[in-house]
Amino acid sequence: MSKSLYLAPIALALALTGCGGGAETAEGGATSGDTAETVAPPEGQTWSTTVAQTEEGGYVMGNPDAPIKLVEYMSITCGVCATFGEEAFTSIRDDYVESGRVSFEIRNFVRDPLDLTAAILSRCGGEGPYFALTKQALSNQGPMFEKAQGMGEATYKNILESEPDVRFVKLAEELDLISYFQQLGVSEDQAKACLSETATAEKLMAHTQTAVEEYDIQGTPTFLINGQKIEGTSWNMVETKLKEAGAR
Image 1: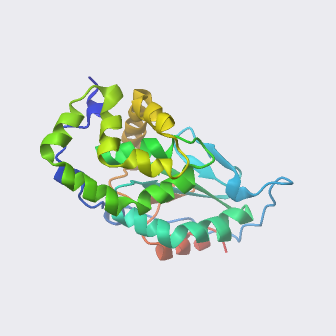
Image 2: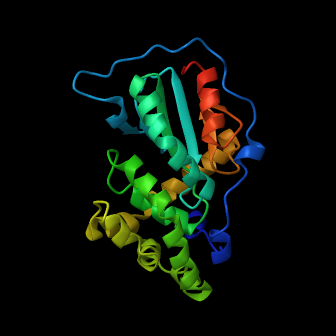
């Protein structure tokens, strides 16, 4: 049984702890540059609806050749990530991505089995709805944590000891995530099929390990601008760095 897929024994209390590390471990800043020029999208398209999966396992929104590339390493069980999403997503999309000057990529940094389950479901609809599903998953933290706390350690441990192809289905059922994502357009059969695909979980764990090794990502959210890790976890700090990089 794959150790990375097992993610155990992780106590339920640990799975419900807050995120952190990004502000303390991030270093450096974006390189200052001239003001980036606006780039028009192809005729009949908008940059905010141009979404593709990346080699690093993330999803990028916007002009693939944007001169300023913002990357967020995030966890769906991270409260700071949820706050950032609430504060920043609309502005990133409308004020920066739509101009063609900035692309925005989210890379899942998986911290625990709850996070992994929600991350799998956020990817279940493919490229198009990924950002919307991720945003909704972040806004569902409160109910998800309530269900997790009500589950109890024994049930949680038994689920994690299940066979890999049913483990995340069972966890999603306990957390009411399948019914939640149904309301967002992911059918029950589709959700269960995605959760049963063990390769998805393995890839998410592998990409998380790569993030640690290549970028020294230690907590979420952590941001890169043009491949350079920056300080700060708030939208105000990130936007300042974007402007310094030329998105002004």
